[in-house]
Length: 230
Image (cartoon, rainbow, N blue to C red):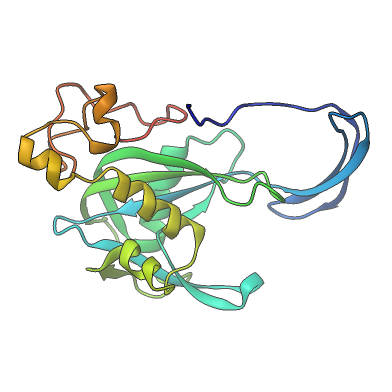
């Protein structure tokens, strides 16, 4: 059986917006359930956001630590931020966030995954990019919004395992990246396919990423919805 999310839109009898903030708002919908009953659903309306898994030539992960007031913690995160204007290209937003938060630029960009952070109470969708071919950006750096970025040799995956890195962007990105890594068994056979999709005959991405091995076809275009790198 194939497990796949499906798009649905149940009937909405009425909708109100009791709160409008600077970036987000709260909406209340009267939703008709399959049995005909009507329920109220309150949720946050979000402009959408992007996150960047930036890996250097040693496969170190770029992390920053920011204070997040709603949870009263300083959290280790990968660079991330909101889409500033409606319809903004997610790639452009990701490049901006990597520059603003870490003063870094990347030559190679891939779509890693798309994530709904809290679909029970918010419509926020995050597009996560894999960025490689990193170098310091031009101009002078400013760390007014964050502390100086840190390069982690252990990465999000290991810190998640011990509960030390809890934001959804880190957790989901680590899982997505790990699922696309080169498996020892496939490596022993000399296969050129990502282990996750080996049975489907789908080749892995670019030769430029040693962890993903060679590919007989170009990588998927950045910005195509739902495309993953494996």
